[in-house]
Length: 181
Image (cartoon, one colour):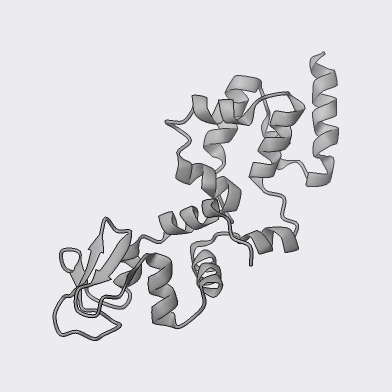
């Protein structure tokens, strides 16, 4: 299973450590009983909602390590399980199902109009957060309205483009270009 760091980051954003741990233990002030050594005291500490450490048995790790250890599954199984539970496509799903995402449309649009995608993303970085952009790339049902509105306002890209069937995208862009000339 091929995994990229961007996908892992998005899964982490969608699965904060505290929300995962509280499925198994009661958390009080970033501490709980350790589900691995079954300590009687709150020896498992959560640091910045990213790392856990048990000061009784020494077990530590991130959200992937926690799920992997508690569910007794491999890292790749953990990633797949967490992605599925969060409504996130894995790279295998994208490749196997040949999914044509909103993000793919955006990149085609940028290439067709000779727009540097990064410049748009940089210009609107306060509105298009990293989590939002990752949802466009990997989310199964992303909110596309903010980027659609920006592209409509800045470049006049109509709603029809975003709704066009994948096999008709280039036809649409060619017709649009001829119409504007």
